[in-house]
Length: 429
Image (cartoon, rainbow, N blue to C red; front, side):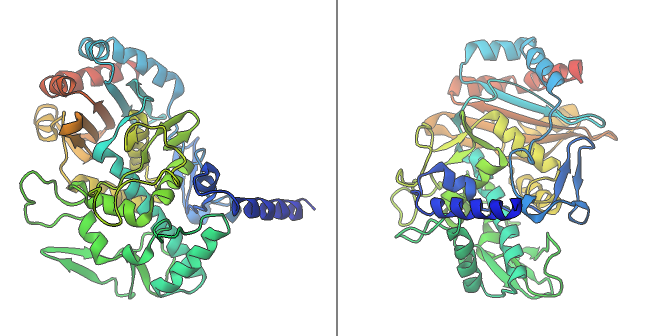
């Protein structure tokens, strides 16, 4: 009786969703996002698909599943310890828009999170492009799952099947035809030969991150998207970062994946919280506002319109993203590793200088995503660093600056700041 009642309630809910406007946050909460692996918060380890014995209906993206699992007590201590450091306390007092989040991973025990104004919203600039990267890989998993389930080998057929799945949750296309993910702009079926795709001097191998397709065709990114993710071996034009970090390139992911789908992944992963409103929220695709098919997410479809920045982040939401990547928990371990690799290949540093950090502190910057917009005084750094020794201790540092003098201070004092962050961590870990 209870299962039948649940099925009936689900049918009623889905019917009601079909009558809601697309600007309703409830639509974004209901777009289905499957996940392939679980997480054991006690052992702090991934539960592989073969060992994750829960009903398929529970294998869905939720903020609870994606909680990074910080040590609450030590994190509170780290918040206080950071403000005892002279330079950090001065920055906190001198600049109301200084926002910092740091995470230290430990060999045993949960990671520790600390920061200064880490939950306050701030302009994201290019740092918010990480939302499009995560959503792209999430969509790849969902579409791979659907293709295998229905034995689909054509993108056009996959699009129709996906549209039908989404429509049952009230997620339907608009008159312009650009609300739903546009699969033909993103993916391609490849043969089981795992073809190597050559672009310029770079060879990119088609990867099977999920092990679902067997000997059948593999769904992977098309050549156009691969060009946006991976830099060529040739140096980029002056003043342009290569690959994913460059200019409008990553914004194309947001355009073709779609604002609503990206926002849905942010909400259901906990990287954006509707109440209170905080986290990663993108409402512009980084391309020219006067170009066709680009620009801002229309207010008629965007359910969160109060955020002042067109690319919103908090220091904590970005730190959470990088922490989950290091833990191998965004989509799955294989996809997380590839996303880390993409972020490692696009050198993008603003206030902290990775090469100098390494030469001074024996550190390796293994992933980073800056955000720079000179006209708006936005200078953000987000990086994963690792000690270059046998312990290979990892940390996440996210420093947000929406002020040119603040950015100058961060750049001028970055070594002292980094050492003080490290000292504060050492006092509590």
